[in-house]
Each structure stands twice: as C-alpha cells, then as structure tokens.
Length: 102
Image (tube, rainbow, N blue to C red; front, side, top):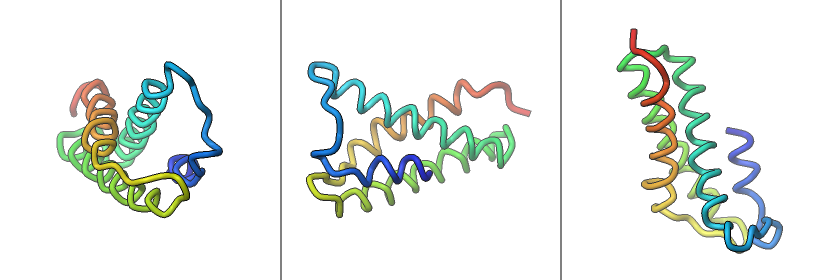
C-alpha cells in the first residue's frame, strides 16, 4: 500500500515516459500492484472463497481511495476506469490464479 501511495503521489512531470509503450507499461503496473495487494490480503484472510472476496473488496476500496488521493497531485487526475478496468482486473486475476481453495 505504501508503494502504491508513493507512486501515485508523484506529479505527472516526474513520471517516466515510455514512449510508444507508456500506456501498456503504466496500466500493467496498475494490474501488478493491485494484484500483489490482493494476494497480500489473501495471505492474511486465508485462501478460501470468503478470503478471496474480502481480498478483492479491500483491494478495490483501496484503489478508490488512492484515485481520490491522486486527484490532489499536480498534473494527475482520478480515473474510475483505472479502478474498474486495471486495478479490478489485476486483483481478480491474482486471486483467480491464486491456487486452490481450502
């Protein structure tokens, strides 16, 4: 959560530009970050159906709060699409491929 918060606190001018690959790299980073957050929650709650549901929900709630936080950073804006598409999919894929349920 600290890494996500730190990275979303950077102004748009301080972010790297990956040229043609910029969109793909940055959105992949969203998916990876929220996938890892969901897996951390899953480790805490346990690899059960209820644990996966809680891990997914808390990951999305954090994504919403982080987008709100990002709206106060110069040159950045909050994007519900980042939450719905990239953060959600990253968390869901990480949980889906997270192993067998107990």
